[in-house]
Length: 302
Image 1 (cartoon, helix red, strand yellow):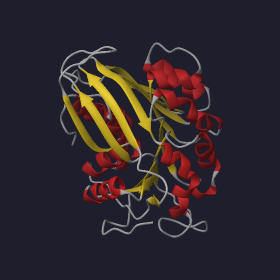
Image 2 (cartoon, rainbow, N blue to C red):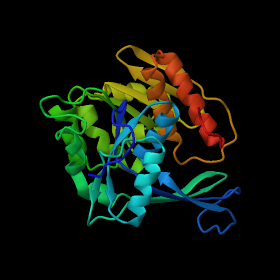
Image 3 (cartoon, rainbow, N blue to C red):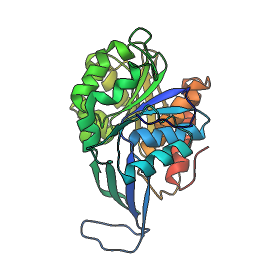
Image 4 (cartoon, rainbow, N blue to C red):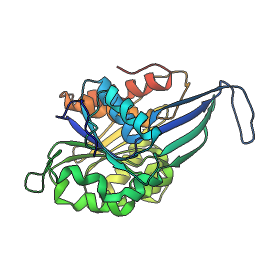
């Protein structure tokens, strides 16, 4: 573990991938084999990191539970996290695992391709949960009972363990799949009826192994499969939130899309922050959609 002068009393735990995002963006529509001018950026990223950054912008203090290599890129990433107001003394630093990376190419027509290299996080496994037992954030005798944002970059074994672990039995779990390719890893949350799931229409279909025509239909499908609560987005189309209290829908603002990587994470973080401030179901969904629309239009959601 590495100490940091950042705040030590978090409002929420963000468990999952914290890495470097390398994103190439072009203003033109692209297809396979396209070679066009654009911009390439490197920024702190990963699902847990993207959620934490947005939560921090909304005035919350997130603590990170993740794996970051004890290498030059890792030191730089730790400094970037602390500078953004995150608690980092909960991060597992590995001497033999490199800092993870994500690479994506985006065009005017959306995401073209992406590769997530989160192998170090997967290899670290349950070691990242040590702060929940050693007194850094909680102990076995006094388990953590607050908000948790969790992403599907963890292995299915660790995700399964989290759904039944007494360490997080009292926590309010908020769960995202990280990508459609990892959506099925969230199966244990359906089996055990734990947490609030944040998915898009495609991810909902993969989890339920069927096709859905709308977010509302997908939210009901997830509830029928055992989900305790689900929020389903569908790009610029109507989104839905479903629970035992029924299903509500909301249509996002129409904006010009300039970026897509991180939009789902922004939606999730904004929704969590709105509810933490006492917003009701409709208002929380509305604020989350506004924040995501602002993000994809190129603005910083506030």
